[in-house]
Amino acid sequence: MKPSLRFLPLFAALLSAGMVHAQQRGPALPSLDQLKATLNLTELQSAQISPLLDELAAAQKTLLDLQTKSGALRAGLAENVGAILTDAQKTQLSQLLNPVGARGGRGAPPVLADQPSPRADTNSQLAHTQLLAKARQGHIDVYLEGDSIVRRWGATDYPDYLANWKQNFFGWNAADFGWGADTIQNILWRLDNGELDGVNPKVIVLLAGTNNVGTQPGDDAKAAEISRGLKAVLDRFQRKAPGATVILTGIFPRNNSAPLLAFINKINDSLARLADGKKVRYLNINDKLADADGQIFPGMLNTDNLHPALKGYQVWADGLKPILTELLGPPAKEDLAPPPTGDPSAKPATPVSPPVTGAPAGR
Image (cartoon, helix red, strand yellow):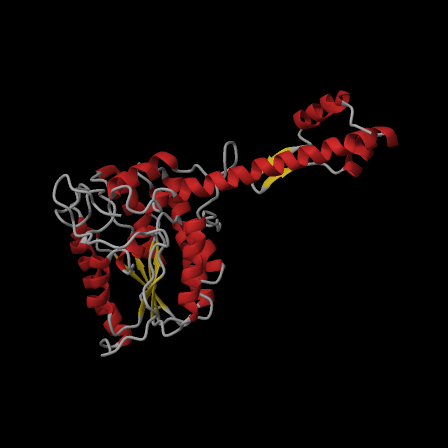
């Protein structure tokens, strides 16, 4: 028996009455039994409505799948396009595709910064697999976590930065677990899904949050939310690696913006209060990267005014090394850390030194 279309207005009424509604984890439909009880349906009516209900459920599942895929592609596109775009172009693309607070599809509530959220695009999943394998290899005493600012430093597809990494950290068994375009939510998901399990590092270095900050200053509520998100990351560290000392790095300045730097400083002030000087150390190098008006010092960042150039990475290394020496002693003559990984989508690497004016800034 084919379902009668005369019952379609019934579903419209259910939708308008709120019995079919969208929640953060997806739409919820009433079961056939619920409809029977609520609407006092006859067996004939139930038989006619049942296939319509199944069809509606299938259509909504397809819509949710498409929204999930769209969100994942939106989140990962700017970082994962390989050599096609310059750094500045990728940053601008990410900002256009991912306006701050836009999470979960049209009309859905945002995923708060202290809630884990996955990156479902294929490249990010491949990178997650790489990082899981790296974690399983052991011999990691220094574990660096964060977004693309962290990732590029120890990545095979950024050979100039990788050389600087080895120059500064060889002998301390350091491993890079950053992933490009990650928000705090994405980092929480990776930590909840095995990337720190069983690693037991002695030191964890964290730099994250700039992708939550975005390009415009926010209000006090947004600053507090980002701080809560980073506190949640610290909680994961302390639960999964209780023996580690965490070096919590303040969010870097960006975009030559005094109002944006003031907003970042508000978050960093909250982060400083999370440090106890023992198990959580706070490191802020921003006065060496930009002046009090947020103007980036020459050579510190790439042309995107977001990612460090070699000079900026060296400033960060100079801040980290005295703490690492205090905690671990001088670096050994050999290094046992797992080999570095890179962007699974990256083409053969090319040098990425800060470009001359008008030249591409690299991947």
